[in-house]
Image 1 (cartoon, protein in one colour):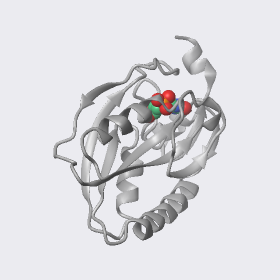
Image 2 (cartoon, protein in one colour):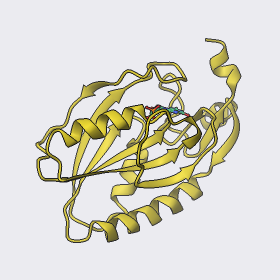
Image 3 (cartoon, protein in one colour):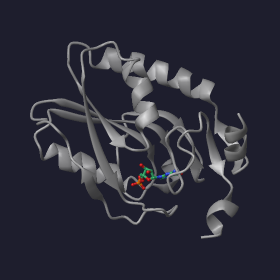
Image 4 (tube, helix red, strand yellow):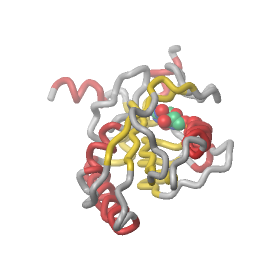
Length: 186
Ligand code: 5GP
């Protein structure tokens, strides 16, 4: 308990509680189950941030499905996107003819998923949709259709439930706004 209390001191405020997350993920799982009925989608987890969301979501989907993992990065340790997307870990299996659902933690400028959706379409997927836990529409720099969004949030740098700052805070059960003093010291 002591450890969690210390990490929480770095937050300005809690934005989404673990109870709100659980409810939203349950509803999203039901919707995906309805929308993909009769299909066997590929659920694609974007490492590392989407991991808790992905693990919770797949267990709320009542369909046969397969899992894939990709690691992409456009950030490094900073709090603003560099706009350059790199694939650090690629798919393990061919996705030709498959219905791919990309599972992401947060859409900010949209650059990462814009790049990734085009890249996957070029590899022969039958369909590509995006499920994101958080969306910051105010910061969009490219046009991007997000098919499933759990929470729209204001323009603030958030951590927790998979989201990090310099690899920390991913294990917080809630999502909170990181106190600017933490990264302004950079
Ligand atoms: P985009 O390409 O849409 O600008 O950025 C997407 C990626 O930026 C996300 O997958 C995430 O890694 C990172 N990101 C964007 N906004 C935030 C934020 O508020 N907090 C954290 N921790 N990461 C963010």
